[in-house]
Length: 433
Image 1: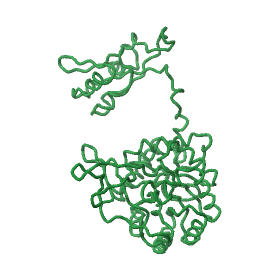
Image 2 (image 1 turned 180 degrees about the vertical axis):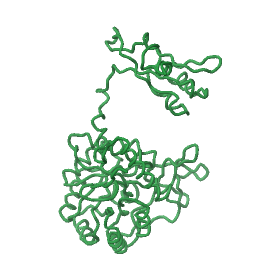
Image 3 (image 1 turned 30 degrees about the horizontal axis):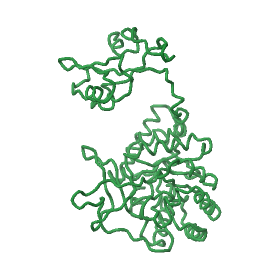
Image 4 (image 1 turned 120 degrees about the vertical axis):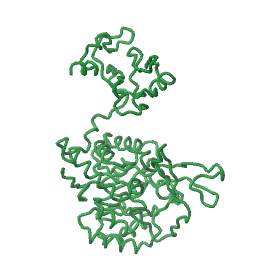
């Protein structure tokens, strides 16, 4: 098995899988169970100062979006930071770190945006033995209305200022957790770097209302007839998170800034994708809340097997895909591909035909006996048929051989005339076998 030992900004853990700051890391009992299950580290649920008390609702705290098979695609939560006493959290953190010295334990923090508050909270956590702090500049609900969370994360000047305070008053590595509720995530990342942050983590939850009760006419979850916006997470946010991670990893102003990837990570493959786009480790929440802490065991074994199969070390994976992320105008417009339907796998459902005929380029023909074939001259390789086909690998995109130059556009186009005998054609390959 590949060695998954991780050293993220000097914080060591047996694997790169951490639990994100959230309900699963709210107390000692949960964190001990997580470490027993195999998690490499945790970010303890966000602690606040001894200011106005944090009081959570005693009704539903989560809304959900499901797929057709009732698979959980996204959670909306309206839970605030920890409502447990600070001294209790600090005592438990110290005890857990003493018993699990090889695991990463980072403390998430959120206090009012003034220097004294940050100096005081940092002084109180110094002797817990924690490995680092994560500044929660991302929470979009409840705390933002108090001038914290995403209210800070949306103002780069505040991020830089608070990060400087933390580096001034603490010996511990500092991770800045970024909000996705912003136009350009690179700006807060740049501010975190200017302030001296050792790393950034992203994404925090997305501001959202997931559904409306059409009988009570209130957002869900509904508390005594009223609802509120909350933070959205889970598999549905993964594409947004991947893009933001990649933007920071490839930007000249933030290139080399360590990243902890967060957002819809459910499998080892999800984690590998984040790491390929520049994340040094990953943080997980919704998957653990959906399947329990032991879900990490599949992540560990899957990533180990993948690295073994590739002959790669963990560090070799980090950032491997970043050079291949580019802006649209730099894509090769001379590249030509066409859809190919494997007749042996086709179940004749007709989804590809309906989608292409009604909403795309009328590039799929249907015979009287429901045999579907691609009209190469009409196909623009949009990939829609691949995405709607219910059978994996039944429809694939195949690169066309280089052909002639279209005099109207000056662009090279595929050599359709020779396609029937070209070795790239899957039908030719099968005939040869």
